[in-house]
Amino acid sequence: MAEGPTGSTVPRRQLGRNLKELRNRARLTVRAAAKKLEWSEAKMWRIETGQTPLRSLDVQAMCQVYGAPPDLTEALMGLAKETKARGWWHAYGDSIPEGFDVYVGLEEAAESVSVYGSDLVPGLLQTDGYAREIIRTHIRGIGDADLDGRVRLRIERQALLTRVTDPLAVRVVLGEAVLRRSVGGPEVMARQLAHLVYVAGLPNISLRVVPFAAGMHLGVVTGPFVILRFPLTGDGVATEPPTVYADGYTGGLYLDKEGEVKQYDTAFDGIWEASLDEQASRHLISEVAGSYGQG
Image 1 (spheres, rainbow, N blue to C red):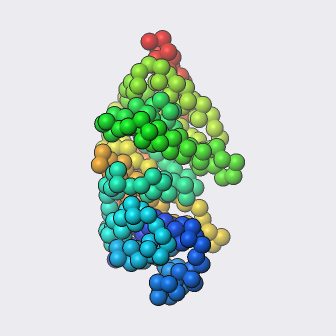
Image 2: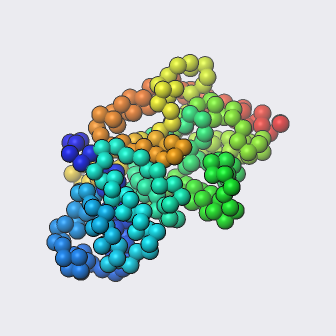
Image 3: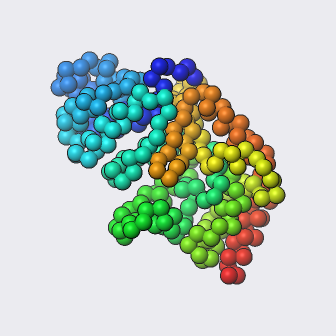
């Protein structure tokens, strides 16, 4: 992938998606919106497809034309400031309004993901109880309504795994620590691990465990990460460049430069090779789940 002077395309793509959705909600055609903004239709197309960086004042003008609420306008203006970044941190935290999330948008558009979870079960595979405990711990003092909403969003994302048309293809490796670390107590863990055994049986999911006995491997260095890949056009070109997402305590790092993605591909392949095969992995998960059930 050629790397232009504006660096990462992730914030541009996400900004374009949200602006297009706002325009559609306002029932405006590209031509009508361009006329109101006194821009060309070509400029509108470049913005909505993430082809160009955008000034926050331009975003503000678009949001005013589309009737966007103040909190979403503010979030999109903040995102616009990142469209010239070479690599960027999504650190808006609680200022992001419900329904606006960069990662969720990318995940929805993806065709496949490769996931390494070193310490926790990835969100796509979490049960309600497990997710609830993680969110409660992460956000001290969170109210019940907000907690319920965040858990519901996490669980609803999992529809990608079982949708009838083109379910998301997933390769996931979990560190053995994920199985051994008790989150929410024995009952929650027993149900969570039983759920992992179930999803490991789905045809679009390949799940492995890298055991402690594997010793040093690249996952020890990288920490948890996700590699997202997107559908191809009729010409065999990816609709969007592969993107790496690494979650952090205060935000997530998005990388889409060819060299960066290649390094993470190499890391994932190394972790995959160090892991148990799928049958042995399911056996280990079941064994550990049984130990929680006896607790």
